[in-house]
Length: 167
Image (cartoon, rainbow, N blue to C red; front, side, top):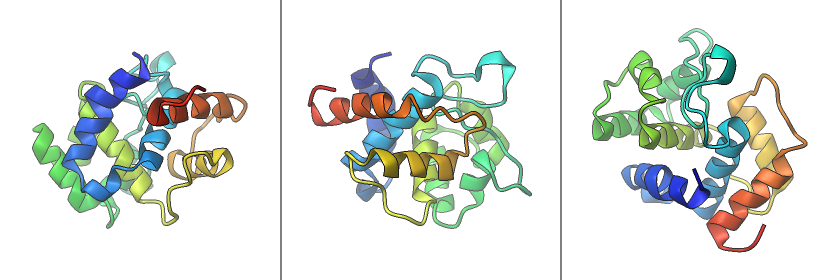
């Protein structure tokens, strides 16, 4: 799927459900960068049978670990907006239902990913801040097998898609 299609069919509709302040160029670049890093917008289920779901490859986590969907579901800054997102997408507002819908509902998955970014106490990095965006991705996604060498190229593709500049 090309990045303009991802923006049009998943990211923009998700951001339209959430508060307008969450729809920024910085947020769109982060969502595209993370989606490229995690799935290349090709796989909605983790390769090799892993637990991650959706283009942004969110795991369910557990209530105790407060990781993955459970973490975003329980976090005080995202919980209310997660309920709004779920209502708009016709998904029951519980972590298991949200997780199970991620590989079938790209709008929900994009919204969950945006809310995940919203749980980070730091501001979103500037659009062109490769290091800051990598650090945010690591803090929030906590990837099991991070691939820092691929991030600059993927981030540049995301910036180009959002700004219209060539990568």
